[in-house]
Length: 253
Image 1 (cartoon, rainbow, N blue to C red):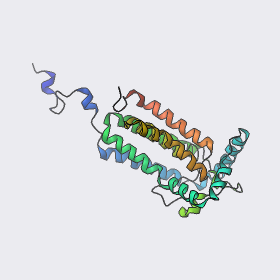
Image 2 (tube, one colour; image 1 turned 135 degrees about the horizontal axis):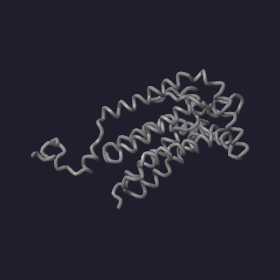
Image 3 (cartoon, rainbow, N blue to C red; image 1 turned 90 degrees about the vertical axis):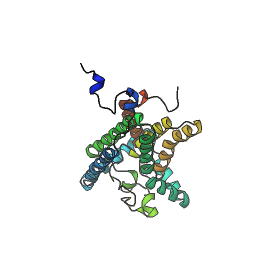
Image 4 (cartoon, helix red, strand yellow; image 1 turned 90 degrees about the horizontal axis):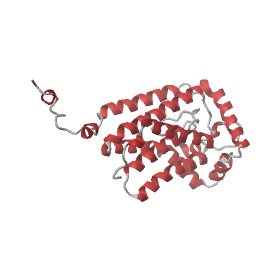
């Protein structure tokens, strides 16, 4: 009688189960996932004008709620930033070009170095984006810079990127302020990168990264503080759901 090993594929005979699980997913499949998410994002953004009235009303409600909570620091920070041209330009360029390259770089880094961690990390990022897109469609929120007669300055537009911020690799959803995907992606990147690096100093750098994003998006009037809290919450929930914490830290014991 033939044994189970005799009928098993030659590529798996004798390989430990852990090694099989560590294999990287096919890159073409991962690219398809990214392209599908971008396509859905494009469809959501295409309905921006239909959502404009509701988005502005929701944005004004958030600003009033922050005032009641004594959290409405966005206008003061934004106005102070625009009075310092070099700082405003730096914040605008970082807003426009930092978060997507960092997020995709961490994803690629994880795919290359930690295939057993990658699937959970990728699933968490997909869940972050699906959640964000669902909220954008159901509860559109205008960012501070688009609230009429609110006194905010669109620093990114003033830096030459236009009101739609279309000079970046992906156009922004004008009425998708809540939750902040800038913050959600920053928290995701920080957590995953924290697990990838060995040196304690680099771990500290990644912990600080979401704080940098917080400062940038408030300076440029692209998000309310409550957007950032919501974005961090979405990322935390997605990471917990993915079971990322059940994978051992790189080089850890």
